[in-house]
Image (tube, rainbow, N blue to C red):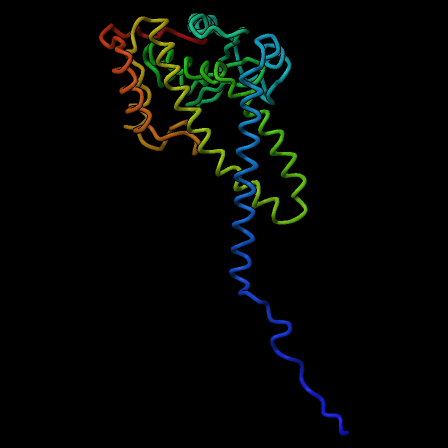
Amino acid sequence: MKYTSKLPDEKVNRPKEHLFLFALKLLSGLLVFVVLFYLIVTASVNIIAENLSPEHEAKIMKYVQMDIDMNQTQKSTQLQHMVDKLAVCAKLPYKVDAYVMDDFHVNAMAVPGAKMLVTKGLLHKVKTENELAMVLGHELGHFKHKDNIKSMGKGLIFAVAGMLLSSDNYGSLFSTTLEMTNNRYSQEQEMAADLFGVDMLNCAYGTANGATALFEKMKKEGEGWKYLLADHPDFIKRIKKMKAYIREREYDTSKKLIPLGRIYK
């Protein structure tokens, strides 16, 4: 019998499905996993944070610090007095220390360690005590809602997950997807802090007048000096939400605004 050589079947090494469809399925599976992972972590951290006792919360806020050069800040008796006045309404289980930050970007931050930083840039923009009180009340809202603790808890878990996946491109994709998902949650936190700020302003000053003043300025002046990043809701939505909330709560908006005195030297 004469041997006749044959070429191998071309279909042997051909993938059963198109590579694009295979990659699409792989990415879809990863996306589903990331979203589920995020939801489970978020729910778990939120439950722990919400059930944290005031004593443990106070200890965490006392010992956890943020990497900020405090040499670029200064204490202000006037600013601290305003924060203390609003904090009475907030009923926090710890004292919040307020600082003026030597930075001319328009910003205010509630940072771990029960510290509130207000930039000189923001202080130059606000003209009334009511405007500033709204910002301070907003930042107190982050403390009240335990946003710092929730963010720290999620950040720690996500960082570990990212490290475990950092040996290949999945780590980068995993981190990017988590960031996109987390931005939506951050917007919800900001909205909640806005409404809390309105409550604090009304509680401490007997009026909600001036609650939206700073946001109105920011909307009017455009993108040039807004201090809120991509994870914050846009100004139009925030203003509409606050005005509707003020009407719903039937807060006063007619009392005179209080001119802002000198906050720092």
